[in-house]
Amino acid sequence: MNIVITCGPGFEPIDDVRRITNFSTGELGILFANRLARDGHDVTLFKGVAATCPLALERVTLVPFTTNDDLRAKLTTLPVRENVSAFFHAAALADFKISKRLDTAGREIELSKIPSTIAKLQLVLEPARKLISELRALFPQSRIFGWKYELTGTRDEAIAKAAQQIRANRTDACVVNGKAYGDGFGFCDARGLHRHLGDKALLCDFLASELKA
Image (cartoon, rainbow, N blue to C red; front, side, top):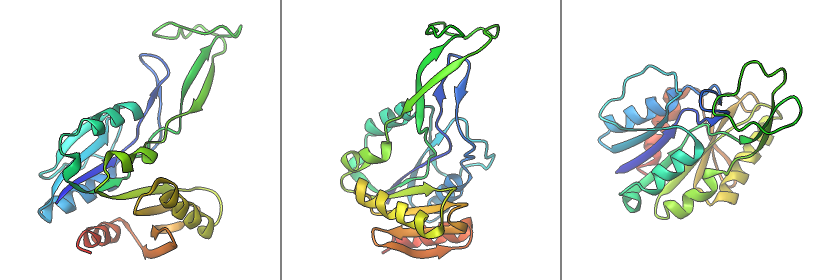
């Protein structure tokens, strides 16, 4: 099968030398990509350039990306989109982007590098476009698996958010994890939790088996 995986953090620039990002390492995406490649699949991994996981890739096609828009553009121009059997969207993309950069007096800063002499810098953020909402249109024939990372609330609430993601974006399944879910990972469909997996290795084994279903 032709498989596409996204992993690692996206970022959004503050100026030409600074950026906002998150703590995603890209480890799970690399582990899963290697597992599928060993199973004989043709795997393309879109990995955020800020991913810190040092694991090497095994017979996997690597495509680095930077921002949400950069990943979107590269997915849009992927030459074999109609032949992708499954899409695993594990990348931790930015939820916000910089709308305005203001100095102490509230004036917008247009410089490519914000001077460190500014006494107070205000960054105005606005919601970034959600790539997951566009995946069904980009990959209409693919099975699409999303991810949901939740820190607050209960396990049941985290599972409900995963199921809502599926329904809202017309994806096929969602992996949920984070403090709200607790240890391990939950594999959810639109009705709720389908399977609990205790660690990354078990999750990779299970997702690989799902491709045979």
